[in-house]
Image 1 (cartoon, each protein chain N blue to C red):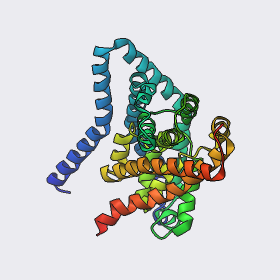
Image 2 (image 1 turned 180 degrees about the vertical axis):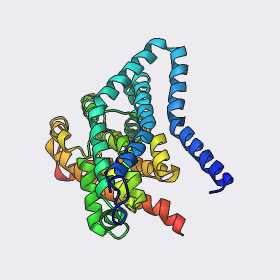
Image 3 (image 1 turned 90 degrees about the vertical axis):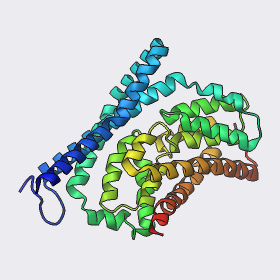
Image 4 (image 1 turned 90 degrees about the horizontal axis):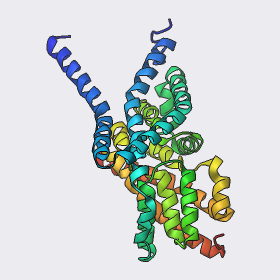
Length: 153
Length: 180
């Protein structure tokens, strides 16, 4: 019968619809909050200013790149354009790579929603590891490209 | 069910509702503070967010439909078999490919992943899914245009490897310790 639990643990059409609607609506306030918070970040956090902290060595530059990527939000396309400009201005490959990876893997803006969904421990550990792994990837990419004798365009 | 239990359930429901709106309330408070300091900038941020929201609804409808199909057809036993604790390498592949082909912002997938977790999805694979979303197949040509093909291929390979590594480490750090 539609709306009642059928065989095993699979729900009927109406029950699935009710469950999906409840799950979805429960997440809508978080989605709206993240979008509006990203509006504030985009408006009041000009990431270009953070590049003033560059020039302190590979690790320090990597940390700055990762920090810029972590606090930034929006389409990854924007990160390519931004990193492309930074590269032309002489920003190092480690910082560029850390920025690109953190942009898509670390979510500072959506962290409260991730905490609500999966718990603080999971969300903080996952984002922390993503930050550290971005630095590791940045160094590995540099070493690999140097080993292959490839120079950046 | 006795009165105390009913009261307790109602109280929990109220707490959950408050928790749902806590983040949104905090953001609204931030807007109020920023508006006092910089009304023009805050208005601009508000309209930027509205534009993003209007662009987001097609993806939200897609995710709603996908969640409906999952709720209708996917049984906990399926989740446990394909992305559960004993899913092995197959589970890792499912999470990697799922993360890569999933579209839209990361936060709209939280609800579905949380539901999968309740049905038995391995926490490591949730982390793998969330990390591998960083690999955007449609945007790779553009990345190659900016940074070269070799750089794009090398970076993508490392990201896929680290998606798996960070997923396993996340599970070990969060749940391994709990188990211990």
